[in-house]
Length: 168
Image (cartoon, rainbow, N blue to C red; front, side, top):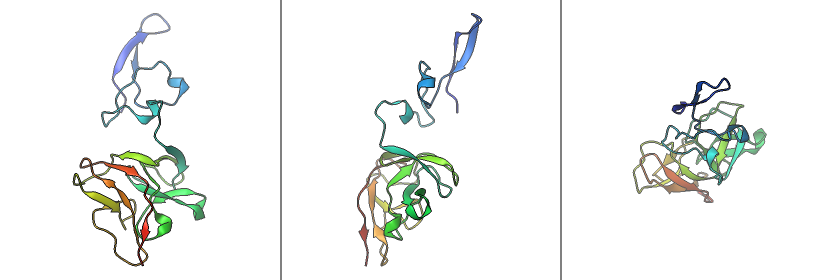
């Protein structure tokens, strides 16, 4: 969704309509007017202090909010993390959807605010459901328990990597 529009002096001297921007592509957006994104926040791309993040390639279709892992057996592509194996531990999350083979920004810490149906104040762990979270600890041999964070709203968990515990 584009931001609100405003009038600026065009090259002919007459007013020209221009849209404010919700994300920045860098120096080419210098001098443009900032608009809040669909969450009502200034996008991370417009802040000089960026969250720890990296553009990586999706190895499968990802949804906004998915917790992810790096699949070293598939050219270090990003897949949905799950509690079924230590190799699938969550190293971060994505804020936007991506399809297989396309670039996606992985956030290694910060507020994952693209979740649903959370209970405020409840601790959440990596789920056996790929990319998801659960308030119920995994309990099967070979699974991992990985704390992801405590819900601060019904849609948000502040994430900071924690090493998982392997169940035997």
